[in-house]
Image (tube, rainbow, N blue to C red):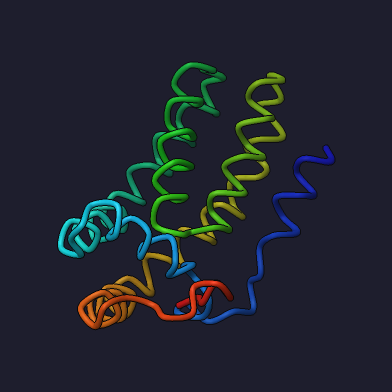
Length: 151
């Protein structure tokens, strides 16, 4: 159950949707790796649009105690979250991943609301995040990524 506490302690329900949802340096690094900001922006847009389906896949897999389906879904969300800088979501996925590996499906199901809360904030802030990302990447990126700015 300590995994559940780790997941729920990362959730910060009092934050506004646009407040510190993404670590912008991660998206900047992706744009630099691709040598173009347009694919990075498209990736962020796709990530945001796919959040509800990914949560549904995780929830369904966990409720059915299907380790393979659950793991596939949580890894997909964790990796894409890491790529766009959704650190809170990434951390929650890591905790749920550990629960799945230990076959603690009931604990993982209890951790879903915190994950849902995190992805809901990303979705709600989506339009603002896309505008900020587009402006930042178009201007040549984040100049102070050493301090890990967040949008």
